[in-house]
Length: 71
Image 1 (cartoon, rainbow, N blue to C red):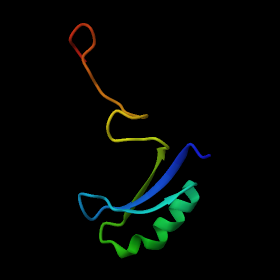
Image 2 (cartoon, rainbow, N blue to C red; image 1 turned 90 degrees about the vertical axis):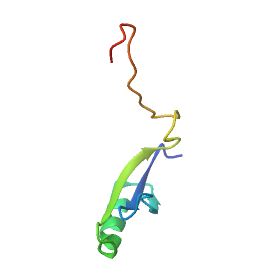
Image 3 (cartoon, one colour; image 1 turned 120 degrees about the vertical axis):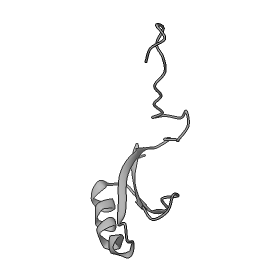
């Protein structure tokens, strides 16, 4: 099982609609180049660890004060 996926999204709306999910960067880049011209702002692609969540799932990062009360 793969531990990461590559997601291609368009950057036209606040929702960044997912256009495709791929196993490799090469596949994602090829698809992004293929469909990028269909969108005024083009498309973006990036890798995500399987299990990534926008909240406190794997890969979550937060900046919190340390024990001295500073970041």
